[in-house]
Image (tube, rainbow, N blue to C red; front, top):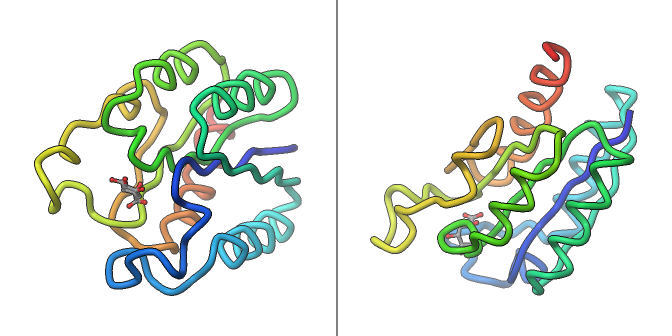
Length: 145
Ligand code: DQA
């Protein structure tokens, strides 16, 4: 089984970007952590990050033919991208959305989540550990299909 770990805009700057909110782990650290977890579970992992909406849509569309599911931190796209919402709704594999910070306890503009309603699950505010929780939740969802 193969799954995709997808990260949206500005998540390439994890570790140096607002560390009081997002912590000190780099994206490479996060990807290595999820890869180790996936390998232990006998699952192959593809990792992709982009700051560009179209590139993320292309990657989601590609995943529908090769992956059993997606762990996805959309970054700020979570709050306004109907194109990415449509991409998630268009592919028939489960997507679990993850946010490092607790978006519900932050600015008003972060309260609206436009992609989450078409996702199979949402993990929010558990730091980078949330990516592992998202992996486990995704495995449960795939197992129940
Ligand atoms: C984030 C939360 C978003 O509101 C923000 O735009 C991000 C990171 C998180 O992981 O907490 O880029 O998705």
